[in-house]
Image (tube, rainbow, N blue to C red; front, side, top):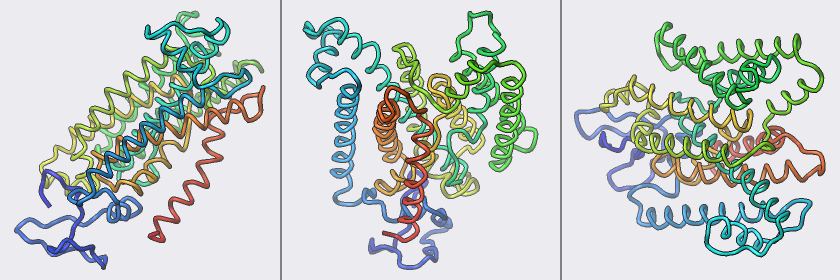
Length: 392
């Protein structure tokens, strides 16, 4: 295994699979790290798109192309679902008209339903799903913890506190929106986590423990403010937002979240080989020439920034960043250059349909998106773990 691609699995010289759990004897002076334990390591050993395979590249192109097509069809189909009957041609006509590629023949009401209500909400669901899935993938590899998710750094709890302070206490005098307050709270929580972890030594376990401490602190602050200052209506609105809601989606939220996703996904892809090295541990990554402290800081900041932007727009939506990375690894293996784009597409498609179910299942009452992701995510996560453990 070369330092340039540490994620390639250990194999005998003949190219066959390893049949035992023992590490392969090194062929040179440098000792080769063993594959990481747990679901990620097992998925890496049987991913169907391994580098170097004869059909790896065609399969990767086919998988990515199919995922992009599925996402486009999902967005178009999701926009048509709702009380007002709208067809897919109506969606394409409205989108083309607003993009300057034609003249839409829809009534102003139907055009407004498509362009101002359903389309931004569906696109924001896709962006949030992709971003949370990418953050979960990075966190699980960076912290070597299969249960890590985008909220392990306390970002969600900090965002909740910021939103509650703005809505309940009226901080900002109306000039600060709920999203802005949530974003400020998320960044404040992340800054506290980084400060605590640095003071405590800066290791990976200290980062996780600092995140847990910040999560409990900001959760307590949120509960205190709600219990002492909020009325019944404010409490209901805050709790609904805390469970995840895309009801307030607009084009400005879509643009901001999409821009942050593009920047952070590019940064993570640029560190794909570094993430592959982290799968073998910090010592192995350092031996392979990775600047561990710098890489960890950059990736933690990128995931925290992305999570803060998504939570400020849609609230805390759980299980997307926990379940989707494991499902994607079962398809692609653990090489992050392939894993990150596939995980993003899978997360986008997943949350588009979850949000569609959340807003239509009990129409006219809307179910918080986080509730639906938990109801779907728990059995899906159990199934993924079972299939990984049984090697099917």
